[in-house]
Image (cartoon, rainbow over all chains, first blue to last red):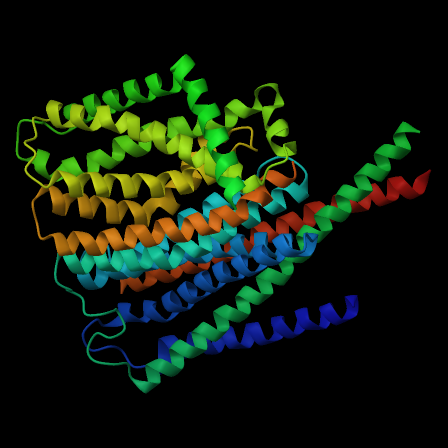
Length: 236
Length: 227
Length: 43
């Protein structure tokens, strides 16, 4: 078992490094420069990749939350937590790059575009989830509480998206087209290749970070056990 | 199924009669919402035209802010003398505890609203021109959704040491779709807009209420189980 | 162009920051674990 997981780790690492450089090459050199937006359009590739991973990470939190409730298990609990942690990182990246992009193409740092606003609320839910996990008490209790909150949070995300989109279209006509990537009528095939590849790269990065994080959290529990053992020895 | 509602009513009436005797929470909530109105009337000059734009938002701000005070108390008060253990070991379905608490909190918050919303209108010198029946309907459905999610998260947060701080952090992001819908519906009604637009928001709010009522109803026993 | 630069520097710093945090966690835990294991096997 242990050997097997090492192979997966190495495999992930060795796909990650070359695909990372290929993605950079595709994004910066190979793909054409967009006519209207110019160079800042190249933010788009990694922005979309990070957004995709952020939402995926949240779905994974929900999945492991459900499994924790059905079968309370340290493994599921740890996986949900690490996924949320990585999710916060990628949601932050999505938000900041989205803002920078908005500044470059619409000349405003923030618009209440449904996707951007949903991502912001997603970020808050993630952080709240991590706060729940920071509570003190036995891990069984925290696992239960945080799993319940994770499920409620996952239910909430699509409703937030719907509500914000409704709110926008009712208040003022749609200004920016239906979405970012539909500007200028469709996406060029070269750009699509670069986009898909960068999404793939970031997903691999997520998987790699996830495995590392889970490993570290498991180690923390081993340390805890060793500590109690040492304490018992001290006591008698 | 019938016994769940009966037990829920028992718990709600216990909470309400407790509250009726001391009048602590409800008094605090009333004073607090008046203070929020006062502060906001300093922040937005009530004499100019801004009033019309901020009133729908303010109705919900005072509801949420004063409601959070009440929600914090609703489970923390059970920690005194370890009453929660008593509730948990009572021969009742844990879901009925949840329903009872929702009912009690809902009545508490609406009775605060009956006073605080007219006070808001008076202090901001707002002339009410919309349809009052629709306005009440929107307020009730919005408040119900707020209480459904709020009671559930209050029970969750009560496990932490810093539950007063934790509750708003957990609650507000989850409330955001409800608040968007509630504020928009209130605005349409207060500005005497077309009712059909408000109805579509109302539908979103009712869907939110039902969905979270079902989810919280089933998940509540997991919160009550351990600890 | 500056925007492009800004965006990518944000992406790399955040990812690198997270990797560094993970690495530090692992290092600390490893050290602690080693110490404890030595201690446990000593007596």
